[in-house]
Length: 182
Image (cartoon, rainbow, N blue to C red):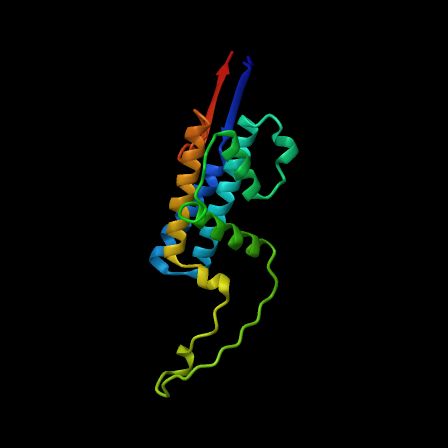
């Protein structure tokens, strides 16, 4: 049987895959209002930014392998210096980034939590309809916060992408593939 040589290659932009997957979770969360979907959408959004920074760093920063493990806020400082960006951390999108980073770090290193609240409730409210105390991370898991995070992460990535004069790997393009048959 005759054979031929086939060579295939594929590049997957993981940051885009993470962002798109998290966006799908957010879309479902808008329909169901499920906190767990919002939680994972926010985590995926945060991870997509981190993955993008790693992608951009490998492409544009010659010493990236020496700093790849520094905190995300320091990575962003490196890019701002490299691309002459002067951010205003007191407003969006960078203000949102600070909140998202704290949320991501808390969720990555969390421990069991306990909360106790007391309040008065009308006697005619059924016991099964009572509310439980919410943890701070649960309070952060809102559709509004998630939508803001997605919009602002996209804005930051788009700004970095443009300033870096990148021609590949923008959000929305998940992969590049190709090959040859001889």
